[in-house]
Image 1 (cartoon, one colour):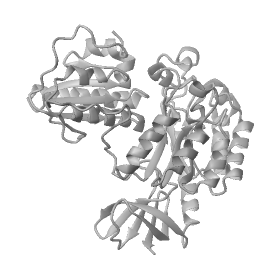
Image 2 (cartoon, helix red, strand yellow):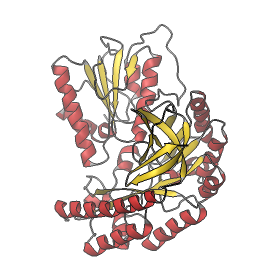
Image 3 (cartoon, one colour):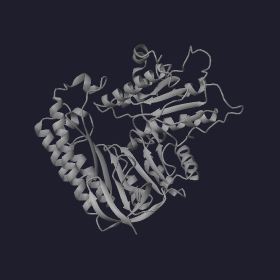
Image 4 (spheres, one colour):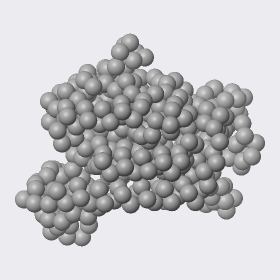
Length: 448
């Protein structure tokens, strides 16, 4: 049995002791969207579905796992073991596990952790819903996109495609999610209108590879047309783009970003490295020269764009020369937002089969620390340029007498926040803020 097959040979429908089911979502925002769809379908059958990672106590607890890198896999396994202990102590009922980790290692996990009551993959989690008896006489039939938002009511993640065709040598995503599959434009627009009617103002558009959106359905990239149409919908205040790929980038999206005030001047694009030697080993299909031209074109066509990127240190072929090249690249490119991580070999990938992961862990960690130290100084310098200027901020929450929010250049959870002193604005509202002080990953100001 694989994670994408229907659950055959199961006994009769599951019989939870109560109507409460906890859904715990791990890993990325794309996983979160799947969890939100599950929550909605549980509610449609009459269950009290909650998203409560801090206090799982349902008759059933469902874990939507991450299987991307070693640390994430370990975190998922540790949570499952904690839940098994809670089950043995009678604090929870049964356990179901779904998601990327289960999709990738289903047979091994079933054998090694038999205490889990049900295993599902990433794509057949609806089988869990089908296995549950209806608790209402007239269960609803949600639309394909309908979900229960676990984000604040004014923002939502919009997953526009699943999977990836790039097959970078280090990445296990295609092994888990399969080939790139886009959602139809009309379906995404219908979901956008529905979410706006429910009060959503901010849309963070996500995919494993935004650059390829539409190719499989329409024979050509359709990201620009999709975002332009989303921006046309009344009530859409911010659209932010996540996880583009630098090669074969759909440059027509830049014209939409320039023209549409509600398309944020923000692009999340993972570059991974800049050395030609390392990029070749990574099978990124882009060179250093092409990378530099790409960044230059983004900034040339969209003045003021904020670029968020992710870089990797310690990949096979990265000697001291290549790392020095990466450091210099970061100093010159001056990314507005940057994350980084040390390479960890992923079984089944091209790199794991063909390249020698011989760089010691202490060397990887030293390089990672140096890289992030450079970026922290750059982030502080860029933030200091905003002191004295006014920015539009979406208020997220209240903390004592202050408010905390984000600008259009800041995505939820991963980017800096703005602290607004002596603020009484309601969460979910936009206010203008004058910046008084800058820290590396935080701005401080007052409402004007």
